[in-house]
Length: 114
Length: 114
Image (cartoon, rainbow over the protein chains, first blue to last red):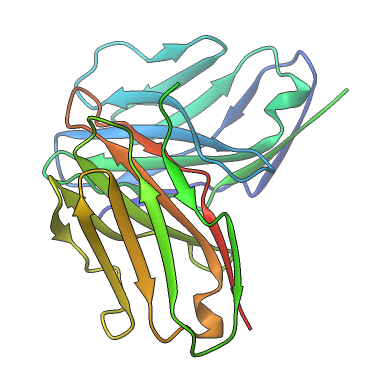
């Protein structure tokens, strides 16, 4: 069965520093997609970044990058130059190619301090 | 700026009452998802539709929950009768099969059943 694990319930980072949020996954499907979503205190879910299992390069979107290590089944989110507005819950999710369903991890609460 | 809309944003009701939540997917998206978020269970997929047809409702308690898409611009999730354990945030998301199958989330309906 597919599973997403986020082992860090909470993380702190100082403004302008980089932070890595961990995500490991388990699947037997060779084709899958990995997603990161941000949920600020207002509650909405905001898509950040996507990585396909066959993508040769790590995905990047502005200050977000995904450190994809396929052999280790990890898809860590790296946020560079943290900003106060990055304080939020961050969810890792996976979709196998034979389904549209997203399976979410339990999330990591990131707090950025000045 | 295309967005998924959900109504109501907040709903407080008494146990035993019927609750109807509505979602308008992004125009052109043919896949609609209903998720539930609770502190205990995190984000769970309840059901999803493609081209208005239900594809998977295995995450939904069948005895009291029902999900429909009367037309391409409206998805509904009903709970009858509601119970206190149904208190949660219910998200609707829409998407279109493509390269990454990104799902765009609505703002959610916060349901409290007393």
